[in-house]
Image (cartoon, rainbow, N blue to C red):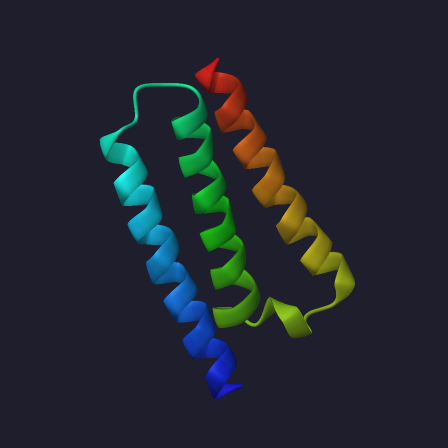
Length: 80
């Protein structure tokens, strides 16, 4: 359990640094979509690991994941 949380934390840091680096080159389009995907990955990591949704009922896991993808899809559609 402890190793899983450390791995998640390091992944969150790496995704944050990648998103920050990508934001410096962001003009429009592909880079903005990449930043949205990084934030969705971070949202899922936090929800599943730190909020312990991994052990939740399957219904709540599916709702959580569908919410993440629907919100990211809405943001991507608003960019166009």
